[in-house]
Image (cartoon, rainbow, N blue to C red; front, side, top):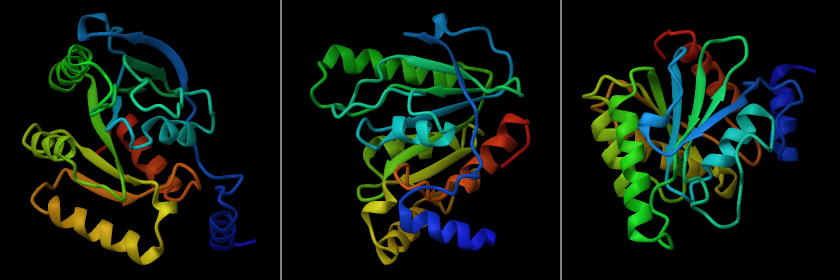
Length: 218
């Protein structure tokens, strides 16, 4: 069976091909603030996004392990900086607390935001950020803030338009075009369509992250 046939069958079944590339990840530790983060060992790739964008599901799809990140029907459950070692590299994945969980108290939201801002601004090991958006509701205020900050900071940013399985191909294309226009002046920012549910876009994501973990530009 050809590679294109495998991908086509995977899309129809809602699952990625059995031999789809993945990144192994092993939980290391959690930190509430920058001072509690483990000593840097190599490149770190942070995953950021609003609390309902499906960030935890993306991490689980990426690693092929549903237990990598906790997924809850109630958004906003990731309240710490969670570090994962990537075997075979010196790199790590870092799951950041989600933004915009309306039911969280203001003090909790402020604490989460401060820990994320400190990590993004001051963590020397940070090699790139994956920004997860709901493809149906892209470019929310936090998304725009991160996009506007990343490029001037010299930090590669890769946008995942997640939950693509909720839209038809035409609507996916329109959303992708809209975001591409929004990042036109940010050469270090890239974007792709993705579905944590079906695995759509997984090979593209893995290939990029492997480059970042190896210290190569995307």
